[in-house]
Length: 427
RNA sequence: GGGUCAGUGCCCGAGUGGCCAAUGGGAUCUGGCUGUAAACCAGACGGCUUUGCCUACGGGGGUUCAAAUCCCUCCUGGCCCA
Image (cartoon, rainbow, N blue to C red; front, top):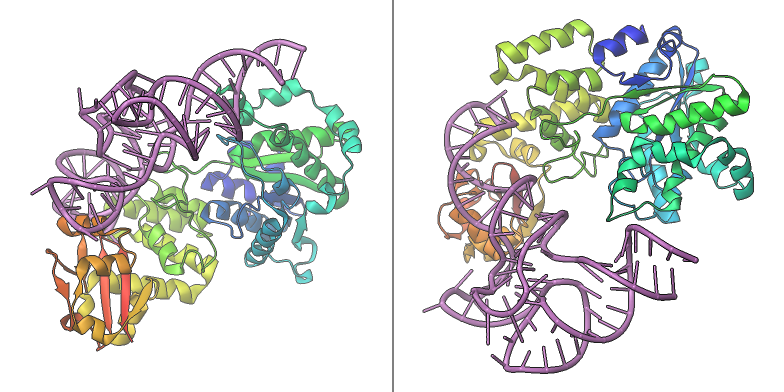
């Protein structure tokens, strides 16, 4: 696989420090790294682009290094952040790193069987926490002027604002990341750093440090474009601002599948390029399908299936697809028990006794109890607005719910709005 | 340490003694139209035992018949000076 042509086609290259690096990667035998911020115990859809990029490199015969930011995580990357970030404590950080490690091993081959392309999983805490302050200031700090550090776009917004500032701690972050690249360059002959476009400033600090200290310009950087939705927010967050996580416990395969299935038309061609390994012809024909038959959403379907299969496996992808079809195309009351359970398997559920229900329960109380409404006032509002459904049938007035609504003698599906489901199971 | 400005609902931000659960924008939510999109349109958006009551304008205390608004104090942050 020719990295240069493939990445150009996919639009994965935003900026490069040196165009020739794409040819080196195409030939193979190069070591490249990406740093992962341990701000949570799971990676999310946004970071999947970077993970897949490492995988693409590995497939082309290069050695990928995934660097967990155990040391830099203690500081916090200020790049393009509006405000200073709270520091993570040690246990939390360790937990996050462990979570991230196990996820990465699903995408990259860290086994010796991969030969020269065997991936490495490193943690910069291993060297950063041992670094002495005076050594660091003399050996690394001396190579940069505050003038150039202040000039970085990534911190400019913080310096310009008059209501918040930037702490010295966060300001030094870029030096630590530069040092990481230097270490990897010396210890592992790593010559390429990848990252999102927000990492450009940090990456170039690294290539510069390598040049100054080793005297060789063997460090190069590639950034990939930032993926923004039509409304300007980052791709990979739900409407409520939650990340779409790669961890099935946090974001179920079904939810991820739905998220991708709902990708808007304008964005889908890009997503197919970034998030799948589909060949160029297939992608082009899906581009056409969006134009000629948008209502079929063939591209979105393929995207959802491909990505969920990558992250959670083929079976999970098939299940998610089937569940979605059943949920949206059939009357839920006519499904058999097994299908019904599968369809609502992702929805939260709660138990209720038979006697409670036969006595008749107020729909307002039911909504609050199922956590579909955060207060009774809100529950009443949903009812007034016609946003409440029992077994997919709209409930229009504040009426009591009783045993008539039970499916298969023990289930009841309560829905609020288009997609908020809750399963009530009779005990 | 000194000076100074600020802290309002999810976010931004108006309000500077009663007409304030607090203008406006954004976000969000519900409905409509659709393709389980986008855009667009309409409505909602602190809680409750809902013609009323309770809780809320950084925390605490005070003045007043009445405070988001005035005073004191503390906390937090910005900027300037040292």
